[in-house]
Length: 152
Image (cartoon, rainbow, N blue to C red):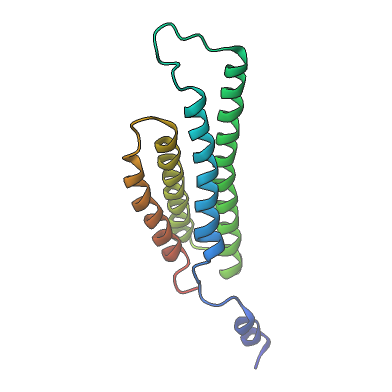
């Protein structure tokens, strides 16, 4: 076996859906901001009534909760995109075709949409039906990941 063939045989197997990176982490990290935004909804309950006076502590809590939610959302998107680009670069010897990068970027847009729909549905009263759109966004994310890494 030549060194080239040997390195190919030791290369990562053709793309396999990673339960950890592709399913568990995105769902877990989407639920963290969703829980945070649900907490925000609980904190602000009743402030839409005429004459409601929020306290300074309530305003500080709202800002802190919103900041944590936004940071958690950004974290999952950036980490997943960085991991995907790194994995794509390794599997293509540092030269991934542009179409693979674009499909990977599309997958990140889909996971962002999933995250946003989940968080908005959790944060706002009456926005629960948005969860119906979150599921197809997550499925589209998984399909794009499969396409980006197809035959690698």
